[in-house]
Amino acid sequence: MSQAAAARSVWSLLDEARRRLAEAGVETPGLDAQLLLAEAMGCSRAALFARSGDSVVPAVEEVFRCFLERRAAREPVARILGRKEFYGLCFAVTPDVLVPRPETELLVSLGFERLRAMKGPVRALDVGSGSGCVSVSLARLALDHGLDLSVTAVDSSAGALNVTRRNAEAHGMAPYTRCELADALDPGWSPREAPFHLLVSNPPYVASGEIDRLQPEVSRWDPREALDGGVDGLDFIRGLLRRIPGLVAGGGVVLLEVGAGQAATVEKMATAAGLQFLTTHPDLAGIPRVVELCRP
Ligand SMILES: C[S@@+](CC[C@H](N)C(=O)[O-])C[C@H]1O[C@@H](n2cnc3c(N)ncnc32)[C@H](O)[C@@H]1O
Image (tube, rainbow, N blue to C red; front, side, top):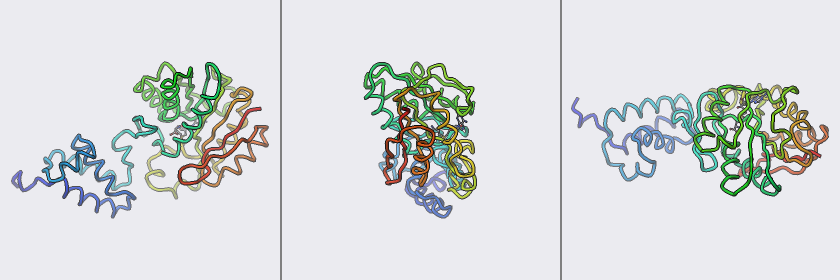
């Protein structure tokens, strides 16, 4: 076959890919096809439109088809690209970490507002740091706004903590981010910088029996330890609430991301654990997403 006969245009490849991904049940087939072709071609998504009539060289088409098959198997785009944008920063993503979610940006905005209202040097703890998206974004915001903040990022997965470290370094935040490999629920764990003025956490909060019913992008690809919150999804939060008196300073703030329908139960659990419930914050979809507490 001649090279001319084999070469396909950007437009026709995108059209075919969109149909292939739609058949595979992908929610955003057009967008995902564009992101993957842009990656294969080494250009931006915007540049694709300007080049829609261009021919794609066979070697690039082969790379694209490989991406496409992975996506059709419901591997998330972020895992294929190995990165995900979060709070305006680009985070490396590996199989060891949860892909950062847009709703988690709320933890960062709220955490930063609370820290900004505090006086003097402040210390924050990010429990279950994963990619480091929360710790690193907080550290970046603090630095950009002249706040004296040090963040301790803890994760029980060595692989995940390496990614936290890598992302902290990539964004120049390593000097402000202490990474600790520990089980945050272990009563024997006492981080050097405790007590903290702020504790933020996007914990594992999916009920074990629900995981296999989630979208394949989540159930097949996110690490189980990043999702599994036990029988009712609240095991981790229950354990963490017990640990708060040993981790957070009096008057310190706790921001916990929770799953849909969990906020009222977490409020009750927190009150029973002797913490003061402040409020619940909805995400952009209107789902109560972050529970805010105070350590009396
Ligand atoms: C839902 S992920 C959140 C990751 C990241 N903070 C984010 O928002 O994308 C939860 C993280 O908690 C970690 N984790 C699970 N159990 C833990 C424990 N007992 N102690 C510390 N970290 C834990 C997991 O390894 C995972 O990285």
